[in-house]
Amino acid sequence: MKVSIDTELQTLEYQAKGSPDTSLPLYSKDAFRLLSGIWLKQEWNQLHWQSFSWLGFQIWQLPEDALRLQEVIARLHPDLIIETGINTGGSCIFFASLCRLLGQGRVISDIHIPEQVRTSIDKSPFADLITLIEGDSASTEVIDLYASCPRRIRFRVSR
Image (cartoon, rainbow, N blue to C red; front, top):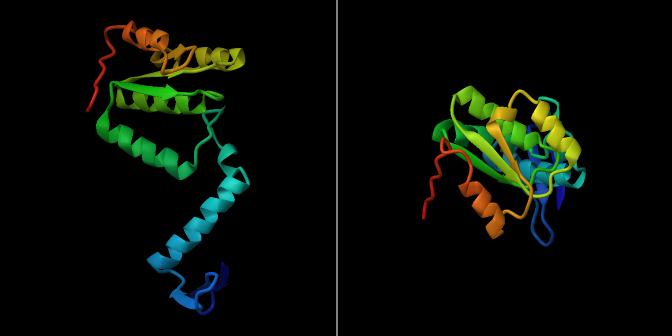
């Protein structure tokens, strides 16, 4: 695809392979959608999504996704957030900080947890809201560990 932006004329012109030239007002919803798609591909290709942190913990999330997740959590006020896969702990800390702000909820995170990640999370001001479980989230053993978590955690299952 060929894209040309003219900020003086406020137009975006593009040509998809085998299609005629198309012109859009630069500040239209269609132009925004087209440019957002290009930006998203660049963000993934350049690993830009890996360059963010939350309270000093690397968080591998697109910033807009993190904001959207925050909106969902703020609306739902979940008692429990289960995260499968911890990486460096950033999203675990992100979720726990939201729970602290909302005055409700806990986070359970599982999979292989590197010792330095476990130590960092244990030293964070949100450690009391986080349960770390080492193992495969789909295994019977880990599911049994979820079930044995403190009673103050209420599970909601929707079907």
